[in-house]
Length: 372
Image (cartoon, rainbow, N blue to C red; front, side, top):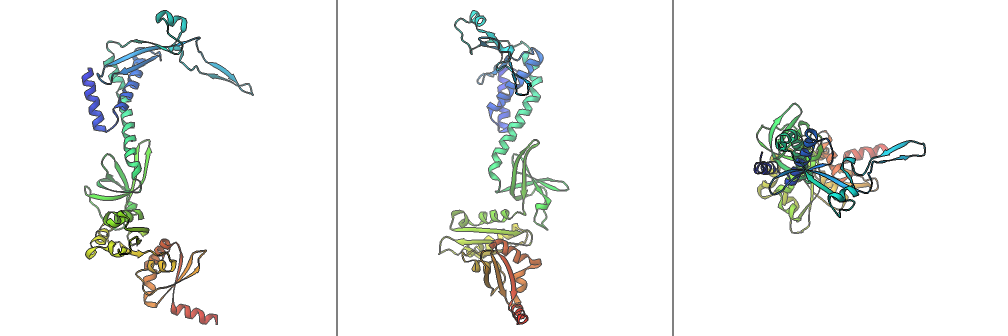
């Protein structure tokens, strides 16, 4: 391979893999140095230089000028154990000052003497020997590039393509890499088709020995939060704030919002004209119920709102320190306040961060009569 062909191949790799040209060149130099030592000379005082403009490859033998040969030293600890300290400069790469000055008058300690030692057939041998090392470095650089691209996207939502599946996971094509979407992180009951686009929430980005690990979810509460931010412009410009979001995937989510502009109704803005905004969110959630809750700094009002769809709720804060509250409802609203398998009251408690107990007026009257 001549210099022009080498540069052409290099630029092709850089463009295809979207990695730094300098990273590839440094990997090449390292690989070619290894190849030279293996095939031509076992000494370590050589380096390979690749001209960044012409692509010309040179093998350079070098010597560092020293006052005396540094062959290392020994240290002895308190127990008498001897430890050898290796030389700062490899012995093969040293030349005494007096010998160096015969070759290069005026040269000083610490400077180097270099000589080109490129073999005539080095290109052929080096190319075959260095291929594996170069590929490894390219994979490392590509992996680092992907990690760099995705490390700031943890906690974000992306759209990908369902590429394949196995018994436990779906694999989502995110462009330069694939993310893992465990089947346990899907919305219960939803069905998907291979090759279709899918919205996913990134829960984890990690570099591993096998490459970038990107874990995805559609079950995470953050997925609902990002859906709202996508559909509700007022959440992006700050007119509406999303205070908190809790979720029991496939059953119900509760999203607490408030307005920073008294002229804007936060609940109405989330619903949209004719329910268009909330409709898009519900469609993506496979029919999961979403309760829009008006946040209030008054914990009693907030708890009352959080127990929606139950109505006519009276809330007493029984212990503000332990964050405990009693919600009183009529008999018709008891099942709504508690929810299927207790889901509504559990989510309301998580949303408000209060331990909520729900009772009816008749239950309170019965308890009062027993005490008497």
